[in-house]
Amino acid sequence: ILYGPYLTYFSLFLGTSFHASPFIIGCVLSSMSLTTALVSSQLGRITKVMSEANLVKLGFAIYAIALVLFPFMPRLGFVLIPVFIFGLAHGIAIPCLQTYIAGLAPAEYRAAFMSITMTTFLLGQTLGPPIFGLAYIYTDFAGTFFSAAGLAIATAIVGIVGGKIIR
Image (cartoon, rainbow, N blue to C red; front, side):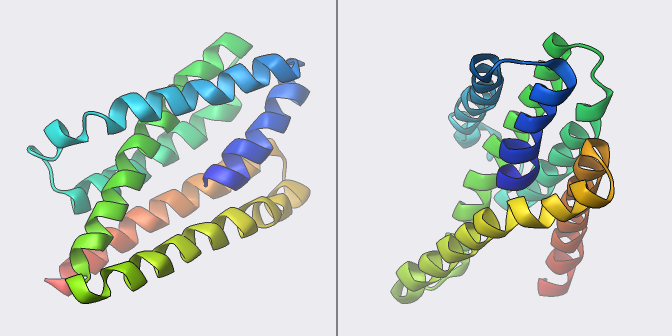
């Protein structure tokens, strides 16, 4: 969701739809990272109200909202709204997912467990652009973002259903 739809196709979308310069595209993309940093710095407070597992599910639902909004932004300045929403999702989902996974692993296997987790993240980073490239080839930018939103919702649903099975 980060490397395919956001970093690859959102960048192209900004250039194609809004004729944004590479500098502006870089500024818009980096504003997501600033939002992510701000949100993730507050997770200690947030996890007092909601568990990491539930925050991961919420994060993926928020990803979907941001992704659905991208194609509907009428002007370049408005794209910052879903970009900040995407940063909120990323700041919640990724650190909570890593913490949650680390907590599931027994201490003696934690390093191996986290290594496998990182390999999975890198696999997603590698496969994201070409997989969503297929969505772009067969649809357009909106279809690419909508298919990514569908993946985000499916991930949230798997988390909800999987959480009920594990209990």
